[in-house]
Amino acid sequence: MYLSVKKSDARTIALKQRTWQALAHEYNSQPSVSLRDFKQLKKCWENIKARTKKIMAHERREKVKRSISPLINTHIIGKEKIASIMPEQMYFLQSPPEEDSEYHPDASSQESFVISSRELCEEEKELVHFPVCEGTSQPEPSCSDVRIAADKNYRSKASQESALKKMHEEEHHQQMSILQLQLIQMNEVHVAKIQQIERECEMAEEEHRIKMEVLNKKKMYWERKLQTITKEWPVSSFNRPFPNSP
Image 1 (tube, rainbow, N blue to C red):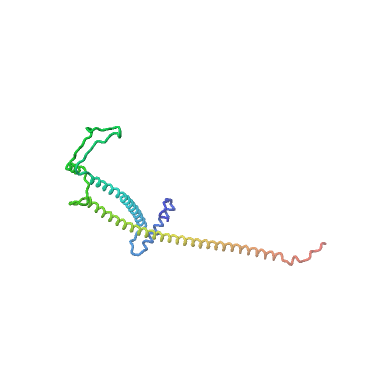
Image 2: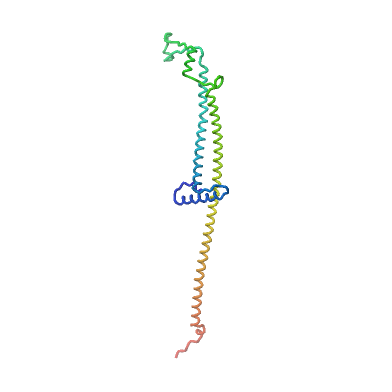
């Protein structure tokens, strides 16, 4: 496939250009299509490749997000469980021992802090807020955010599937066009080979004709030569007796 070759020599560039020209001719010969030259088809192909890379990168990012979202949900549920098991009446906070067996704290060193539930609620209100989806009289933003995110994910997944389907269809059409182009190139190569063989046959026939003419001329020359010798030196002259000496 010449279009996927990454070489930049003159022969490859010329082959690519002829390939695109043949592809444009094949595309424009189809019925009910807008006429495009090979530069426009090449630009369209590059746009399809770039869009395909963008869709695949977006799909990889979505997979990473889907793999991380369960960890985030688990973290939020753990925080809600911690908030639910906090005492409602009071907290006794004691200083922990610094050593295991060598440290013996006195009764005076232990301090008890009594925190009323009202102060605890105010502190929780100021510092920590865990949204709960169920059991509240007012709508919680976190629930709506979750629903909106789910709707967005569904729409995004549907749009991705539609885009991938369209991309596969375009890729299929592109591959079929390239296969047709390859068939056209193979046909052109075969036609050129047949024409070359025909020219070689014609040249061989012409060369054979010239050789035959030369041989015929040589034959005629030696035939005339033989006739001349026969006339000058007839065979009967050799049959006469040898003259006697005086």
